Length: 99
Image (cartoon, rainbow, N blue to C red; front, side, top):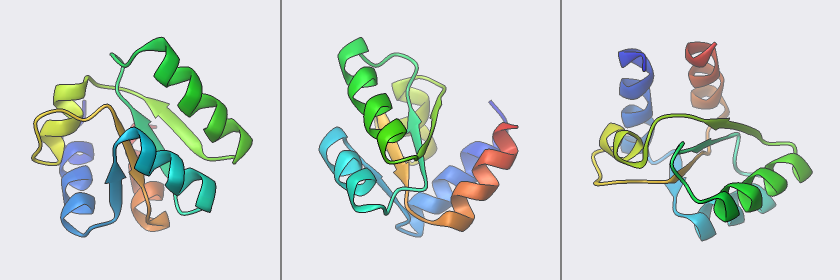
């Protein structure tokens, strides 16, 4: 994974422009606050289906990448399975870095 992507993800966390955890991410998607959802590649199929369906219904961009440990490490936490980017500017730049 690109180092710039991980650094930007950490910056978004420090700027309080992300939320983590299944319930909080689902709430952000439903309320229209989530601009981008990042899903760890090693989440359970049930969790992935639930998040994917919500993202499709509410038209939120979903990207599956990294592992729980890598996602968590980027924001200075142990492990995170799901991260929602709440800021449109951060989401746009992260999508550019993902290609």
